Picture (cartoon, one colour):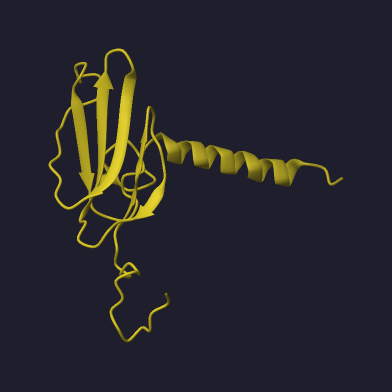
Length: 126
């Protein structure tokens, strides 16, 4: 069912629907999904399991209460919860307030870009 733009349509998410990564994995995972109406936060829950290792769960939630525990200070069986507002803000395991290009990823991207540029400039044409 397609819906005319002039009428509300229940089967189509509103244009302002929040998008979060929704997935469950032993490591960081990325799976963009549109959230249901009314969802306000993207949540990342990291649970430390003594035998199985970490479990990372990402989802959309209406309310979210962060629990602050720094990596390395989480005791086994503990859970750390990160909350953020903004499309796909739960991409990394860090709090998303610093923006998508903060941290070591930016330096790596710059280095790779520079290498590619040098290769283009310095490579003899074939």
